Length: 343
Image (tube, rainbow, N blue to C red; front, side, top):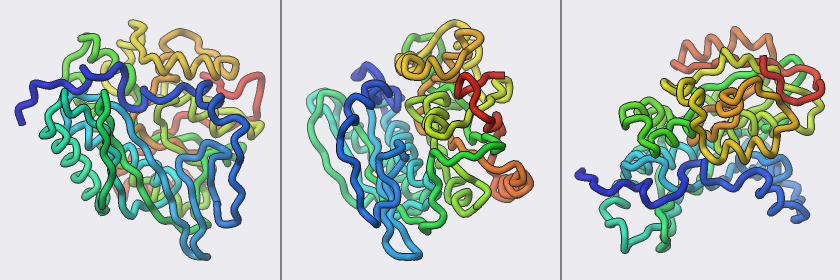
């Protein structure tokens, strides 16, 4: 489709980089009542990726919602990425999606409706890949383009993976490269071309289906996905109430092409500094580029999970059978002066 309109021109930030910062979010949520219902297996106590409601002894319902502003100019890509990102919350709990509803805010006086059609087409194609329908939704007129999904999923109650149950000695893995926020900022500044962003766009469209299989492994203890608060922020969600720490081997962190060079030029998304401001006492970056990469906000990022050391062979077989990539980046250790130790 001819696309003279660039969606990112209508926004100040995009993707998961437009989330509230962690300090702001804590301010909003503090002192709100914590729901206590016997069938609510996962709520908002630990910033879980989704809520989980026990249906019966064999089935639990997963419910989540996620939406954001465009991180790319192409509407089809925007819809695809937003859909993959919303579905990720179900996979991060270890579950399988069932269906979705669309959430749309659109500046109809600024951006033609055929662009919104392309957003929806991209989302429907990703939903079809996941084997689910987008069965309805809701639209409003807004000043900036907004799109996302509310997703329902299912899981066996014993297979739920929470984000805060890492154990001492666990190995830490991620499933996608880092650097989305750095690349999107560089693209907006004209530092890289659309071709330089292409590998990241392909990565953002990739579904985190690994989560459904990891959910059934008892050796996997904690799992989340890496989104707006970056590797540092989501590691801290895993660790901050555990008395444990993460020892991260920075040279083993997978990065999209050009990310290392751009970080060395001090190119970063605003959200990275918001995350750093919240957690700066919990880790020390040897150089600014380490901070930029560690706090870089990811959109439709990979899974972050911990598994016992004796699960290495199981994970290797699973990866080989399904074409997954489980990249080991560190280990869960006893807490020292800080929660995250860069090696």
